[in-house]
Amino acid sequence: MRTLDEKFLDSKFVYDGRLLKVYSDRVLLPNGKESFREIVKHPGAVAVVPVLDNGDIVMVRQYRYPVGDTMLEIPAGKLDPGEAPEACVIRELAEETGYVSGHIRKLTAIYTTPGFSNEVIHIYLATDLVMTEQNTDEDEFINVETYSKEQLKEMVVTGVIQDAKTIIGLLLAGL
Amino acid sequence: MRTLDEKFLDSKFVYDGRLLKVYSDRVLLPNGKESFREIVKHPGAVAVVPVLDNGDIVMVRQYRYPVGDTMLEIPAGKLDPGEAPEACVIRELAEETGYVSGHIRKLTAIYTTPGFSNEVIHIYLATDLVMTEQNTDEDEFINVETYSKEQLKEMVVTGVIQDAKTIIGLLLAGL
Image 1: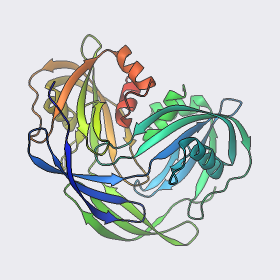
Image 2 (image 1 turned 135 degrees about the vertical axis):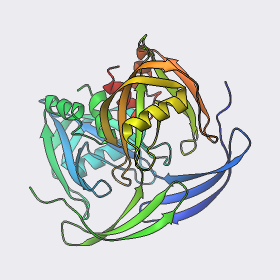
Image 3 (image 1 turned 90 degrees about the vertical axis):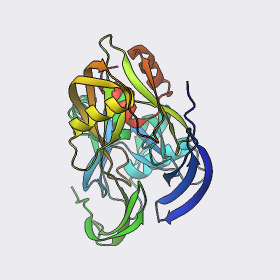
């Protein structure tokens, strides 16, 4: 088995955006040549499949500017600096949907785009949900929509749901 | 139902990398305020679950620099300008694994990171595989590994496989 590893040589911070931080790193390839790897550095995120007592699942719909359309997704959000994923799940779920969960369980963690970003999303299942009040950020516009597992399974299989973390969360939650 | 749409105002090309093209767009939010959306524009990609006649699945392992480790994934690659996804599937599968497929079927299309990129991956199932010869790009280092469906299911459920497109492809292929 040949080695596949690439060795870090040096890094340049090439774009310092409000959200996106882009680096261009010089690396040594397995064949001894040099190349460049461009990376969007991301703080990491959580996503959560919130299951109501009757089995229905709480989803959020929001406009996704890069896609140019609204998308139906499971609730999710970026980790604050130093924040534990479990705390982030509880916080984001409450902010986006108003539901507070009495029980969460980790399903998996995924890399969304390992070719150009280190973004990792920790995906959880949340149950024992109690309704409080939605409390989104000022510039966040989110509709909360509830679906049965059968409806969501149909939407995954027919390609109506296209968000990667959402498809994985729903399938691993046992659609 | 309130409107969620954001309106495009203008766009600035802020980072012109070898691979990454980053734009910062000014948008009008549903509340009438202005904001900025940073986007990594991506040409789109394909991924493919190659199933051998005995039911085993052909996987690829490569070093993913942003993650800092090798990852086990289904074969995948970016669309060339004007290339049809079906042609790209056949090409990438042959280049990365050496297998030529006699039959492909679309499983779904996913957005990997709709929060900051327009990357879409068209995912296919490939069967009727015939071995030819692996033919990777000069700077591409890929090991081909074959697993049974049971092995892959275990690796998805236990979080050993962490690549989003791979988890979705394998689950929709009926692991």
